Length: 339
Image 1: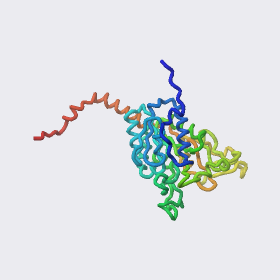
Image 2 (image 1 turned 60 degrees about the horizontal axis):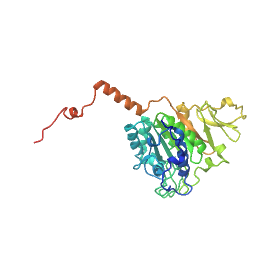
Image 3 (image 1 turned 180 degrees about the vertical axis):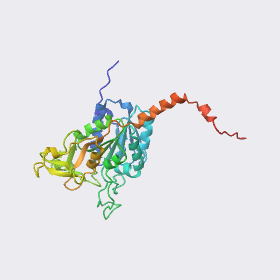
Image 4 (image 1 turned 90 degrees about the vertical axis):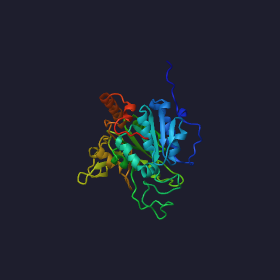
């Protein structure tokens, strides 16, 4: 038997011209995904990308795999059907903050709560890019757009917080241009047996340019990013001199500086990705002077997968009732003779 062919990122790149605006963060995400797939030991012909509508949803065209470009917000439903029809397939859902959390919010909720065994990549640029810059469910208060010329008054939805509230068992966050960070996050998501939700901060250079610069800029990243790793203390800053502490009186997270007011490393929280309460607090961290959590925020690895449960139930029913007989089914119960 011939040894399996070693694939590269070029094997996953289609012959289609990539058509996103110059400077769009989607380019970096596409390249990272194409480089990551060969490391997952999955056959290319078993890989499927499913998308809805939006800039991000052009993704399947640029992948030399199977794929569906479906309708607005319905990618979770199509992807669920694909996975249940053939659980051997490796299914990825590509969506955006508008597609996945506005018109598709209801479908996203049920895919997450069911824990369907697939990967969801939500590109969050906090704006509607494809339809010319209207505000989205994740846009910050005050965002000016064609639909909110005087500034948005809507309180924004936090995708990672939303996912946890919907019952997601794996929630992570990463950044479009940070390939070294995104790659292991994607690998962890793929290894998870269930619905793995990954929020990706993605720049829209046309309608929301620089929205995440304070987090992405190397000069400020040490102060604005909280790298969460299981079993490691929640510290940040140029010299890791700052940390996250749980205030015992308010039960809220607070920022402290080591060495001040008697604060030591023993006062700093250690990240436990299996702790949902901690995950909810970390996912919601934001605001001036507050770092945003990036990495695997939550992972409940022993949660049952909907895909596995469906097939186990089928086996149980067949053993209990015997093989199905379609002809007998059609003639069971009330019937009518048409004359």
